[in-house]
Length: 107
Image 1 (cartoon, rainbow, N blue to C red):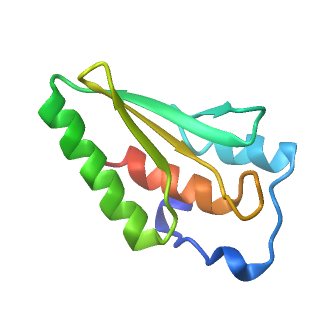
Image 2: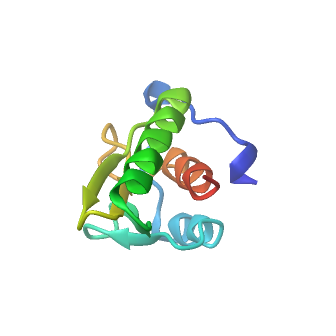
């Protein structure tokens, strides 16, 4: 289960996931979808106001720091937060992206 895993350092030499692996991990990350030619996963979260969106973005930042894996976080339209994740060092998706997505979904 991804929720109980910890992100591994990207220097471990692993490459990007293949299409089948990505589809299998997507099944465990409800609400997340593929973006940018299947090189990223992303999800949009909507809140009742800007303060709640900002609070959520800060919690995402805390998780990212704890995991050592940092997504792109965008607050837009005053109450929405888009979180996009991919592994920069491989130019695509790794298990780390799905671990992070699962933890963010639990906020």
